[in-house]
Image (tube, rainbow, N blue to C red; front, side, top):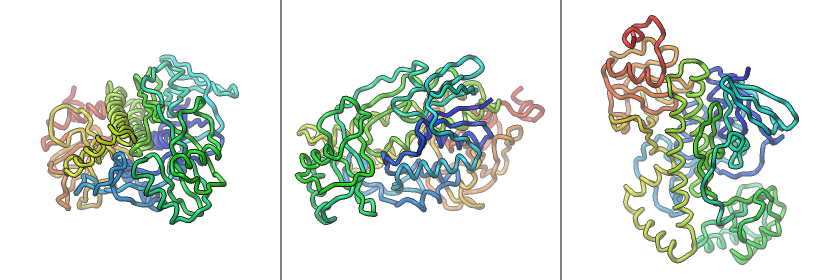
Length: 488
């Protein structure tokens, strides 16, 4: 039997497949589209997603195909210098188109042994106490132990298992596409600079090879949001917004997106789970959507693998929703706020000016950047050290970089005391006795226990305090070990 069927071969589904395969989970990815999309809905990775790629040894592949940009102007397009000394070794945005991200993640999943079947549309889901049965449009029936819907905002999986998706429908819509233009780069730059003084939903970005990415407000919200806009519609809206259509021609693709904001009532029903846009949709302001989905997968992958592998402690899979749903709710709130701040109405413009002044304060600016990039996320692990629940940034150790030790997706005890042990959990947790050599900010503890997603599960220096967190996150120790005797 297949262990896990993942529905959707976007960044979330492919990241999840790769994470599951790190733990030898038999995973099948089903994708409705016969070919990878050329539509560029997302344009890059924020700091936390860059860290995720680094933690799995993938970052060099992404850096080779992307461009680094400073962390300014990402909150509602308000341009301010990036905060000083952010708690990350990657304080930049990596500009890299979504189709390239998907290709790199697909290659990674395939290298690890995941199966990806394209042209497979899911039409039915039925589950029982032992597993999940799915039906495809061609009549094929498959069965797995678990099913994860990573199939977007109109998720068939979510609808099939009856999970509600409350929120607000789109009020405004933006036309998006890649086109060629008939005027000079200088003319484009001059018009864009003037229009964007007030209209932040407008832009033309050169992509090279004569192409531009165009974004322009639509004239209302389309009745059928799945319909592809025409070139004439794009031209008409360019004239209405900028006074010229720039001679746009030869579209490579055209699309539309709205500002709907919705959050799934729950992330799990029985053996069926949701991740990415299937669980949450929001406006694209701040470029957080793709990143949020990848981070969902990073949180879920090791937990679902633990359940399949039989070593998960009770309730581990429930922590996926408990941790990730509040993060999504916060993103929905900040994108709602950003949409108000980019409105051209006098009231929102007045608030925008106020927020821009507040962002001159370093603490305000830092808070907003940490929110957008997700490096400020802290899961609720209870009271304790300030590091507890946070992910640990990369630090230089005597034997190399911390993230170089996390490629296998296992737990990690980073021990600066030399007195600790993970005896009984060696099959799930690595033990590294080392020290920080850069004196880096964000460490400040004798020893830390990291979950496979890099979040700090324990901080301390005594073995007696370590055993409980090991059991909480990594299950029962091997029978016959000293730890098993202590827990028994």
